[in-house]
Image (cartoon, rainbow, N blue to C red; front, top):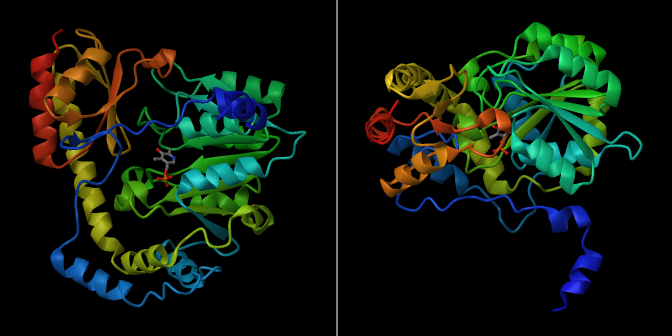
Amino acid sequence: MSEDRVSKIIKPAILAAKAYHVPDSGGLTKLDAMENPYSWPEDVKDEWSRCLQQAELNRYPDASLSELRSRLAHALNLPDKVAMMFGNGSDELIQIILMALNKTSNVVMAPEPSFVMYRLLSSMMELEFVGVPLNKDFSLNLPAMLESIAKTKPAVIFIAWPNNPTGNAFEQEELEEIIKVAPGLVVIDEAYHAFAQKSVMSCLHKYPNVLLMRTLSKLGLAGLRLGMLFGASEWISELDKLRLPYNIGSLNQLSANFIIQNIQLLEQQAERIRNDREGLFNSLSKIPGVEAWKSEANFILFRVSNPGADEVHQELIKQKILIKNLQGAHPLLENCLRVTVGTPEENELFLTKLGKIVTA
Ligand SMILES: *Cc1c(COP(=O)(O)O)cnc(C)c1O
């Protein structure tokens, strides 16, 4: 195959991009991807498999997702007049929003460091991405944001709330300031809603330029791939045209319908994770040579000094523990790593191993 032909046909932005890398986690204690570590009780699993037997896989899935829609509207106490659409994970919703942008308004903005997909998908679609650095303590640099908004007039601003990988949630008043001056859309990404227990849902009606994004992934269904986008129907009805008609398969719809009826199970697991997060934070902070940041999500960001993050990461892998190394991801993240809150046993194991690797 001639490489020349590939490079002629494929967009330069894609040729230049690096594929999103998912590390091999076989045999490791997996604390790298904000997964819920708990499974379901056997009777719930049995009920779920019985439920899946209703699937008619010879038929296309329900394209309107009507049952899921009404169950979710009820479960989430969705305000009147808020429209919703579904994505194959919220990653797909980010992609859909970016695909919809007018050619003449192609600036995408987010504070940084933040969720990497905002930048990655923007650059693959040849949109201009403006990352506004956070302060050193990972709080929002509001003056810099406002200045950058005035200068670059972004079509979309993404704000992860709480933010990934830093774990903090910016002040709501700061979000409102941004929303007020934004010339286009502001997408508030509430992927960690279950762990922060705060939301802009109830004030969506006040902000006609705001979309709210949620996902079931971090709540405990990372394997399901179900993201949700909420906002005024004027926006949602346009974006929904870009959604492939059957993006949520029948098995996923049945599973989501089932779990929404059992949502208290996931909420109890989230509560456990929130409690364990506090213990993990306190223990991490006590390890000499470790600086940890308070988190409102199900992970904790921390910095090491001796040895550096690359070495700590590798050493933990040798000891069968996988966390996320953020060295090199952004200048503010020098020697930073991110650990997902696991079961108490997993957290303890991680702390013990880490304590033996780092020194002050
Ligand atoms: C994990 C994460 C997502 C991706 O969620 P999926 O629904 O699994 O695609 C989106 N936004 C943020 C901020 C995340 O951390």
